[in-house]
Image (cartoon, rainbow, N blue to C red):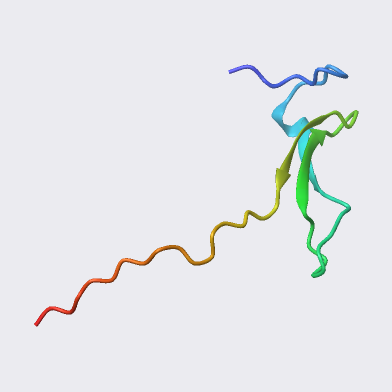
Length: 67
């Protein structure tokens, strides 16, 4: 398997891809997202959300009691 190569500076290796917390914070001071970037030049590979919010109360399936 080949090591990933940064398209901007050309450095190679999976250890050169790092992530950092975003500067933007919630009311509880937790980061909103993570930024995956090159440790050498700062090239951004992607942004990943810290929290995912889904439906809080979905449908429930209730089984009747057996006697």
